[in-house]
Length: 243
Image (cartoon, rainbow, N blue to C red; front, side, top):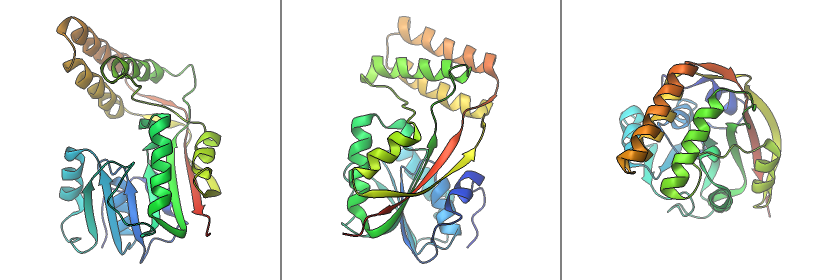
């Protein structure tokens, strides 16, 4: 069935992948953009895995109707999913890695290798390190500062292509090709608002004397930036070495 609202970046990343008839995993389902794309492309089954209850509900609401026999939404930690070993043909991670700190990224890469069939495929789409002169960097830096105060770790880590390729290669994945999805990335006001919302969430967990200025700075940055076109988004296609 056709599913509306699939971003062009998802369609482009999946364009040369075998999806029809495949058992797929969207790792870090978010609002279900790639789940929608996989279903539209004829996936036999899609496991949409997220550790966020709100995101899980959004995916069910967005693409659940008419796909009960093909969609399984799972609330789980991506470092240890309930999926069986060697049970998935195609794994996707769209905009996931930049929200994973290095230690978690390595654990997730290992888990994705565990659940994939020998010879299985993986598509990783993510943002390159933003240019240093990008105005959006100020908002990202604020988000990371707020995250470090609350969680003791950054909210965002932008990995160079070579770093992501090396991390996944260490767990048996070999790169088949790389493509550019966006150049430049259009950071819209909606995107910036979403990052400001993350800052506000952290601010709510802090004393008002700290949290209120953080939230105000985030709002001011969104207003000042408005929107910006900077940086790139890339896609890496991998195959799991058949051993």
